[in-house]
Length: 606
Image (cartoon, rainbow, N blue to C red; front, side):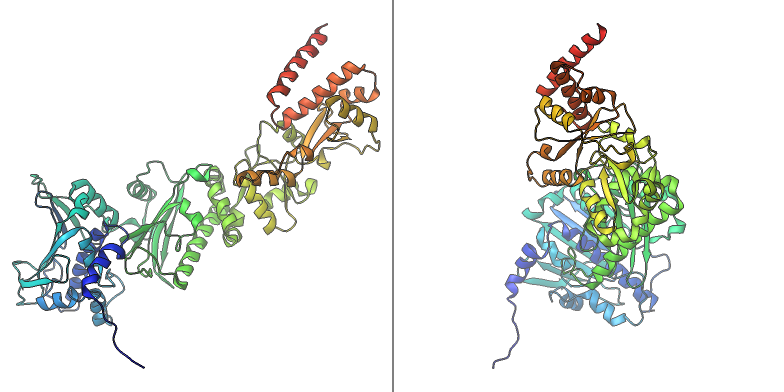
């Protein structure tokens, strides 16, 4: 057996960091500003512990200075600074985290607020993703310290000498190479700073060396974002202003949820419900994830379930288990608990609105129903938590929960929810149920197909039935004991559809001569097939034509008093009228229908 120590070829370290550690080149802006913020937080901690002597009015800030002509970007802070020995320890030793070292040293004396951002000791080296050469000019806060200067061109060689800095803090200069060319543009650099550091808890100033303006620049960040406040201290106007500012969406959000939790994990944030459109492909939500007010990424699915990504919001979780690039989460039980908490808070908010602010919630429903239905289909747990907030809109524009609908209609139609997916085409069917005071729901989007099937699986005995799927007992008159064989045979012969399923029933409404029905199962199979590109063949074999035995025209046909030609015209016209109320006629069939209508009208005026 042989034992030994793993060795690392230092010549390969920086190329690995540069090429593979970070997913985006612009990440160096986040890392260097975060390090500057850490340097300031460290100094304020040391001052609170009596180990630094700061004036009471100390103005902490981070300055980013762009010099396009000189091809440099400077990151300057007035934080804790470094000695030459600390440079050797924290900079020359790759992956030695100065932040972690500081936390470990003072952990027994530190309070929970004012987090140190860094963890892995690698962030500084992201600067070589954009720069060919990096220098550090720094002066430690310690009394009598000498300034130190460090320089490296991205290889394994570095130089340390006495620095020129006369004020406490650190100045890091990036000499930009080809890979960082884009960041020499004012707009590009400023945009990246706002993206990653728009809420860092230290004022950040952007300066362009080419600018002649003598006006005092304003910070590019908001160091006290709204999510840090308590919900009770925020006004509606503040919530709306923050929404417009962060998401550049100038429509009004419907409502929002303020998240604020300290145990078993720390989480603060705001989730907004925008006005969602009716087709999921066109919905683009954005949930921004932060760690200690530093932007991590948009729409991280490990933390935020996919269906919640239809929302817009910000969430700040200091304890996120990030990997070394601070861009991706390590999968563990913590993340799962965090995700579950967010789902529960959303469900609680929806349920609370449905119970306590029903009038406004009804108004929201048309905008948010696709989001909620999608969530119910994706996660059973979400449905169980917010089922009392799932509404169904009727053709009359009324809104019911499932319990309310059953309470109102169950005595007449049992545990069945009657719905339409096309109010205009199915108006005759809707009228039959309206005459019996039965509510018809509107379920007209593609998502409603899997949604209804899913809810049936979760709610025992419940059945969704499209209004044209069967002739309900509630719209029938008294039972008809006749066989009507001759009428059925006559009808099939005249319309040329011998395989069509035809039956005769007496409707309570005698004005309708006939209606077409397609079984719920056949129609759902066809619609699901269309969603997934699967063909189930022609559904006409499963259609049923029901003649209304109480209608005068049908009675005349059954009496047999018409000659053969008139009988054929009447059968074809009844068949086409039924088809029109069920869907569209083919162009050829519509042409025959129009011609036949003209003939019938001429006979009428004679």
